[in-house]
Length: 76
Image 1 (cartoon, one colour):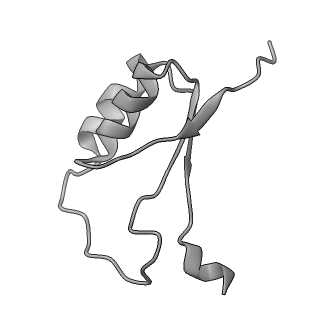
Image 2 (cartoon, rainbow, N blue to C red; image 1 turned 30 degrees about the vertical axis):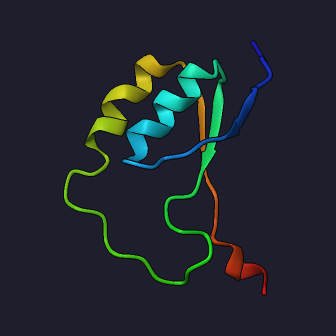
């Protein structure tokens, strides 16, 4: 089956898992998010286990595609 994805850019403020929650609330099948501030070259490392809740929630979220958006500065 070749179903179309419907998605949007969502906030991941408070952690990547919140991006899944936001996408689920909007009833989309795809989300796009910035894994770091889009206007900066560098970012602090994520703490150990930061992705754990995201990976736990992903299967039950209904989100079938996740795209991490690159920083804007690469366009300069």
